[in-house]
Image (cartoon, rainbow, N blue to C red; front, side):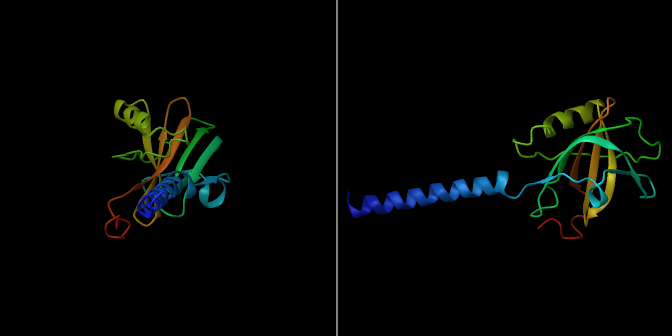
Length: 161
């Protein structure tokens, strides 16, 4: 093998390994499971004044990453599917696509169900991080999903850069 072929082979191999590392970091590396939903991670619904109304959940599965405030996703079941009347609906709810391996969360399915009225979106917590709201989508049978979404103050608070 000539030195040119060896050099090209090494460059291609290093490019392949770098690509694999970047893919792994984006899809798997930064995510951590959210197991404990007490305290700051407890599921809430907000009322019109911003007061947090705790809700009891079961079958909770969640993921989050410190690298971005928008990587939070959760799937759970409400113990009591009748929501407090004071729960604030969330206009413009747009579920963000999560990693494929987190199979309980389907942004495409949630988007369609929110548009058709099969599910309803509520404000979970306003400014859970500056410029980011936690949104909760609830189905009549008690299934529920949560994600973080940029709010109207995101640009002011420099979340988007």
